[in-house]
Image (cartoon, rainbow, N blue to C red; front, side, top):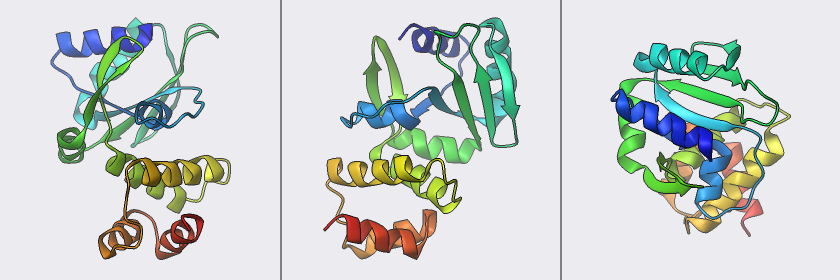
Length: 176
């Protein structure tokens, strides 16, 4: 994946880090799922670097919020890129648990199963109807691949922290 190799090279040359999240991270953990973009977690303190890199790569900003930057590629054949902007503390916690994966020739830190589940639960709690089935399916697949004990009190607390008790109950029911 040429764009990810370029991003990785530019980031390393500038002492900046990122973590692959979203569909490519789910795929890296052995779950086959289609995705239409590249999702990266980055430190909000590095936002100017990332905006500059997008400009250098001829990407245009489609949407920018306090938590996300969504960029369109310069050509229809290229990957759109979404950045999730997080605090240094949140990034460091996720990075400590991240796993190195080879994404078609780009070796990158990739979110752990636990952190992917947390992000998916948070997205589900936000109730975005167009994402519901994909995110819930990802949670179920990640739980299975990660051999997560859905009946444990730890998992219940995890679900209520990042999602809700209703999501926990749905996961239990769907995991039977």
